[in-house]
Image (cartoon, rainbow, N blue to C red; front, side, top):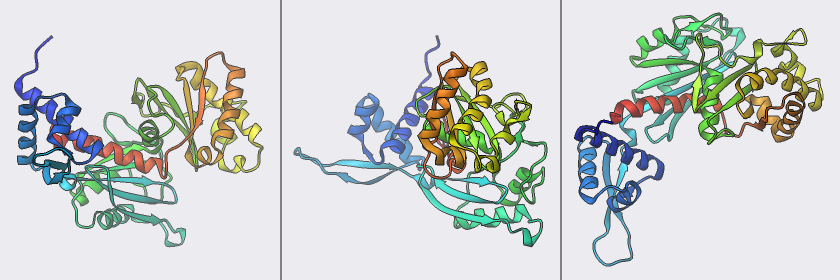
Length: 344
C-alpha cells in the first residue's frame, strides 16, 4: 500500500472540507476540525488555501456563549460555477440552473405546439438555457431525453420522437453555447435522483420501472448506474409478456382503463424478468403514474411478485419531489462540475 503524497493528502482534505460546506452550510474552523478530525494547523492551512483559490470566503462570525472572540464563519463560494439540467420530452422541456451548492437559481419551460410545425430545437434550447442562466455561463449542460444513448461516446442511438430532434443535437448545442453538453437517457437520470433523493436512498441495488408517457427502466447495482454495452440496460418496455410488448400492456391508454389489481399483475409480469436475473432487492415504480398510484399500487405489485418468485423484492413508489429527470440531470452536472472545479 502506497502512502499518500502531501499533495494528495491536501487535495483529499480540501475536498472533504468543501463537501462539508455543501452539506452543512457556513462553518467555523473549530467545527471543521470537529467534523473532519483534522488538526488545527491542517484546517487553518486548508481554509487559507481554499480562500486563495476563490472557493471559500469569510462571511461573518458565529455567536458563542464562552468568553473570547467569536469564531469566523466560512462558506462555499457557490456562485463560482453553475450547471444546467434539462428534462426534454415529446411535449416540451424544462431547463434548470443550479450553483455549486445545488441551489436552483433559474428555470425556463417551453412547450412544443404542433401548429408551429417542426421546431428548431437547438434554438429553443439555447434561448431557454440563456434565460434561465440570466447572464451566467454554465460549466456544463446535462440533457435527459428519451431513447438510447451510447455509454462510451455519449451519442444518441436509434430514432427519437422528440419534435425537432437531430442526431447532432449535443454537439451543435455545445458549439452554440460554448460549453460542454452531456446527453443521457431520461430514465437513467430519474434513477440517479431516486438513488440520491428518493425511495432508493441508501440502497446499493435497485431497478426503476418508469411509467410515464413511455415505459422504460433503469438499473443501479453496487451503487452505480448500469447502462450496458449500448445503453439499453434496464429497458423493460421491450420485453414480451403473454405475446405482447410489455410497454403496450401498461401504456398510458391501457393504465386509464384497467383496475389497480390488473395493472399490478401486468407490472409484476414485466418486472419478474429483472427480479429473476438481477435480484435487486428493490423495485421502484417511477414516472408520473408510479408516483401518482403511490404505495397502494406498490403493495399490490410486491404481493404479485412474491407469488411469482422466491426472490424477496421490496416494491416502493417514487418519493422524489418534483421532476425526477430534472433533478437527476442537475445532480449529474454537479458531480462532474464539483470534481473539475474542486480539483478532486
